[in-house]
Length: 163
Image 1: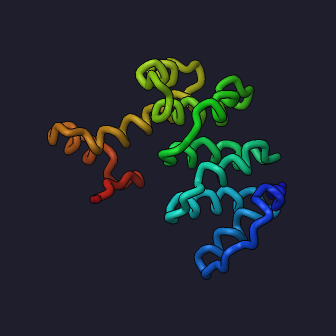
Image 2: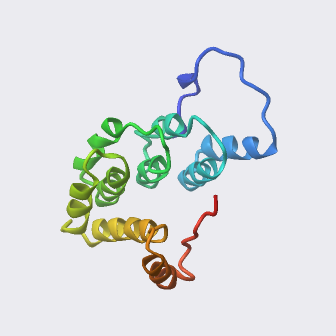
Image 3: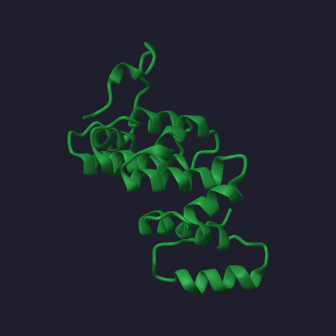
């Protein structure tokens, strides 16, 4: 189910370009895979309100979309961990694992969240946390750690951003 468009204020919407239109079309799609794609496209854009967009899909009917919410929100600088925290007790293992991975980057004590993720009884939860550790290792200040992480993740979709 696409989010309620009344979520935004009553302000007149700004004109959108073709990229924004493509993202909006995906986000408002009836198909869950398209909404997930829309969140991923939005994360790659320069959208300043990324976390607010993520929260629009917090209670989406699709598990895949609800998994994409904390995964996408993990990239937000202004993410509010207390809004994602309810997902930590979710019965769906994929949603719970995504929430734990989110907390490793946004909670006050990330070490405790890494420990929780790495000891999760579900293999999926452990894999989500390990994935985040590999991403962090790619940026390690020790060049040998970064080099080893780069070799271990080669061809697996991990990229190092050069700012």
